[in-house]
Image (tube, rainbow, N blue to C red; front, top):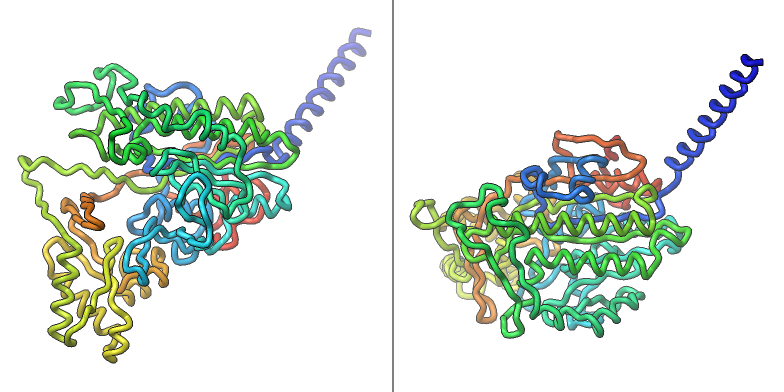
Length: 525
């Protein structure tokens, strides 16, 4: 009798275990209800590890503890920026295929730089800016998710930066929203059909302009708790964004405070649109910043550390909101960097680090005089953008001059200028002989000659009466990525991975087609 009872209990236990395992297997096989893509501008692995003890339980530490942690993501192109890096991550392809080589491109008709996603055929909502993804030549993860669900799944993107928001939303997304530099309002473009109701409510009833005067960016911790801060940083920093301050919205968007505003709008989208709770797989893409503050007074290391500490709190807030509404067990989260670090800090003259100023306007003038001496009078050089010089193709054609020849002579001349350590022609880039230049070039936007400016030097440009100074530093930093999903075991990958495989890897986990230009194989997790 006792034996029979024991056998029954054993059978009951086995059956219960099998049911539980079956349910678990089914749960692991189900497609996530929500996909959350998070881009973090200039995110660095070393700062995450440096400040890990200052982070809470549910932000970066949750990603490190429960996710797949890629310590070193390589973008494989020279000088990535916020637009080109976001396009690589979301399309799984390089600029020469996806059409996004940089944030700014040269407009040969107006002879001025313009935004790569500028589209005068569209108008803005809550902004005068005109943007669309028309110049993004291929599909994105967001597009493929919408296609797979026959447009039933929602896709929303939130970023301080307009072009990043649009790339994350793709062509088929419902909406992309960003903060206007001019008004501080949350803006979008008429390319997208949806204007989230919460966006209008926020702009009218709780606008950033009505709150920004009262905001202060001050340290989150006592000064003594910041790590490796130079002894010269004796006092806590304090930044305000008053109405009388020029470019106050741009300064705010670069500060450690902007991530809180981004989280608020992302969470409002999550809740008001019931993302992940409608029976379809929805997508919410969010962009944060971990960039050094270019408006810092002197050394900016404390500001940078504080940005990470504040960012960790916003990551925690976002992930907590997802867990409370959809459940992290029903969500796939991927976090990606932009693969560069723009410190912008120039060493004090007392350290005698070699430096100088490279002025493109002066270089244009000298190059034009040189070409006139060879080919005769005329404006041979049209302009400059992104360390590239653009020649006057109409004049070259009218004068029956070889374009290849004049490019080579221009390259040879520019290479001899102070502050220039390399100069490459269009043909050099096409042949891909110089550090993956070919991957980064889009022929329609490519300059005739591109230059490398010596590290330590300043590029000083004047446009419309405004002078901008860009300090040239190397960008050799480790950039991390994370994938958090019930389908993925916790792991730490130290070997470098190509940023272009993130899209096919996420697509594989979602069981959707990879973006149409992605050629890399998914990483096996």
